[in-house]
Image (cartoon, rainbow, N blue to C red; front, side, top):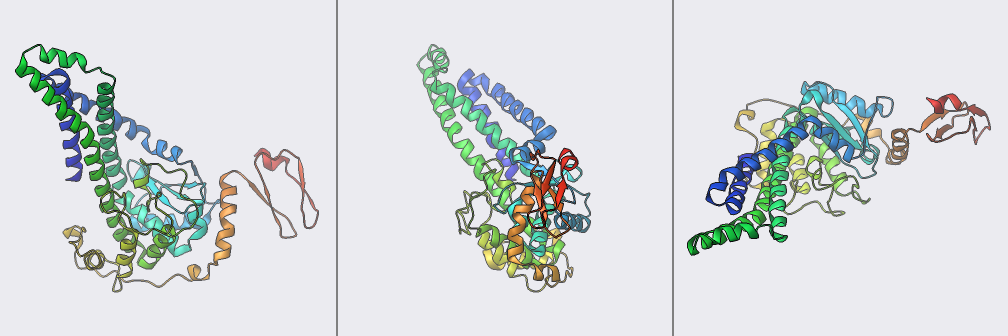
Length: 397
């Protein structure tokens, strides 16, 4: 319904602008032009949209060797969701966050920041990955992409029309209408005013619909993530850490990519909730409370009951998913309990170095030499034992 409402905004805007430019017979032409713009942008997005998004985010593909734990967690959630293994990317940024992209599960990619890997324990990382796998499972990435393209089409159409008005290119149309008599001239002016108002309001309305669509998908992704992990506290803790992270905001995000992330990358430091109408995500504090209210199980029914209890509104979980099923909660993993905060923070630097092509060369004395990719010397001396290591072949590879 939200997507259909966005389509109505696009069609009405094209029709009104067409009538303002070409007169009563121009509505159909305007509608066709608006549809053509949407089709072209859709084709571009379907052919290379995911790669454009990953490139804009400075995401780098990684292998199991760069971060074994991340790879293992993605494999676990892939098996739990019954999906093919997605490509895994790391964004070289200390701010914790993550997103998924791709046209379908076969071409899906999951990107996480180095900051997320350094600040989450295993259960928290599993909750984040499960949330992103949910977007892949239910085609949210395709759905939100289509909505984003429609929003872009409305904004593009609106900006072209308003800028043409600003530079006076509509003067010829006004004279042509006014030459037909006072009645025709008055109708032309009225149509022009309606078109200007529509060009201003349509992008605003479409963006609000886009935000609403994005917020609903985030709630549902949380519900599926809990069902996959059977540990709601993991995702709740991850959301809390991301929202309360005192570091700088994500530098690679923009207004187009913001709805793709698990938490709004433009949050204010320490801010857990945002305006319900203008935010790309549900209030993070509310999402956390819903997850922590799930004390009896990890089924959709349990999430639905927690959602209604916290938000005081009707559940957004489809009725078909509320069948009787028992999904028992599990305890925190031993690996997550033993993970030390200091070790996590030290790992952030190593993750970033691996992503940037550093070579990790172990020495017999226990020191690991971290050699940058632009290192040109043929040998390096260990600072502890002074053993000399040949680096020519390593750096060349």
